[in-house]
Length: 149
Image 1 (cartoon, one colour):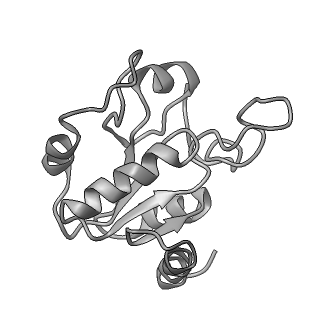
Image 2: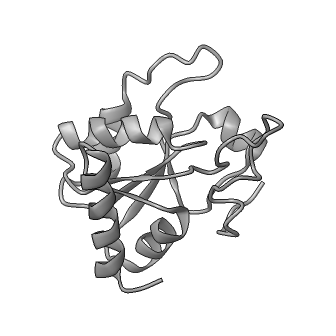
């Protein structure tokens, strides 16, 4: 996998390549390596509680919904809840189902002064396959990283 510096450099390269407005983007395996090795790193699961209940959880992740279920309304307390769990200098990793909501969460966190915010590409379940199903093309679960039902 490489050193923490190597992983952060890859994330920075993706930031520049994709013109991301936050610190960088990580694969699930890279995110796990940072989360478990970098002092103060925190993983925020921004999926809905229903998704975590029905699809699976990441043990030790901090749960803060980006959108609520079932109406998909934005969580008006997202930044307040984030500030209760993290400080501005912390290394923050955001994950959702596929990487879209976590991208938005990383943007919001960065705009709020959390400059070490990273998006976890592929998310928990990855992209849809040719049959429209998730869980078979990328993602945290498919990478064999820790999760529970």
